[in-house]
Image (tube, rainbow, N blue to C red; front, top):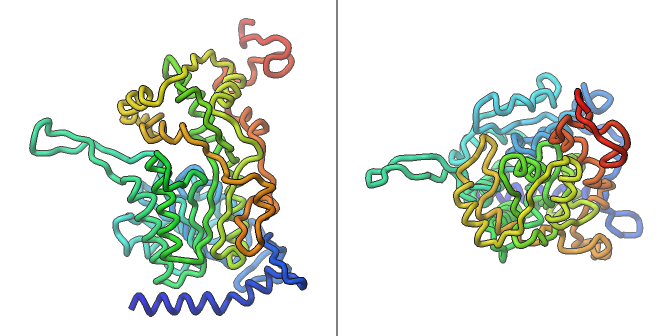
Length: 413
């Protein structure tokens, strides 16, 4: 039965490919991979476009409650999409997403990643499925056992389950239910040779999705920054909470962070014309790379925190992280042994932008440039949400900007 459905889905995709190729190919035969402007109204579309309109597309979203998910929901809701939001927690954990959609344009469905039928209920009759499920740590909770010491930390979802099993299940359901398109969000750090289990399982998840749904579009973002991030905020929060800020092996590893709303715009571009991006990979990264040491200096220049930054050997920091990983503080641990491993490796695209541009068109790995999106520089955004860590916030500086001129505290000079 499943094989028959897979064959029917494949036949359906092949039947639509000539139209996709016609849209993607000009008269000279070269493939154009940017998203075109479609002047014709699509089937089921109504309104002027944007808010108070019906885009004629239904999108099921897994992982909408995460950092990236809120921006994706905002983009989809702004453009009139009907959102099927997968919710595996309490109703109040997802209520902040409701204003992103017009009234009646969102549906929240409870599911369990261990219950295949409940995941199928989320997908229902969706045209496109987006998977953004992911955690940088393995969720744990206290549990009991019969032998001494009777209490142990039980792992709720492992990296393998979160990054491989759940994406595979979603991809298999998309094939069985003949969903038109699947967008899978992976990571630029996905690498089978990485010392980080998170990065290794991200790679395995990509392969599992491509095996179950070969025409899936894979989005691979770099580290995300933005107001709710655990990236730049990590430096500021660590300086506020602990006596020292550790940089593993001097913080010399490179990273090329990307603004979260820019990644959401990439996903929205794919949703707008998904057939054009079938089977494609899109690498999403910012305009500049930095070392972690440079980022620490940048953050503390904005916040004015007198942070004690320590160069710490990896093995020492992993030992500390093995204890601090249980200090979740409501939003996940500040550091884990696996995160330490990840911070020792470069988190950058495998090619320069020029090398991406020089690829053969048919097998090209796309970037934001191909989609007509210009990435925001970290220097243009970070101050907007990091100044809150200053004593007195942005009111502290009375003349000049960031150290130019003199500064005085409110109510006292």
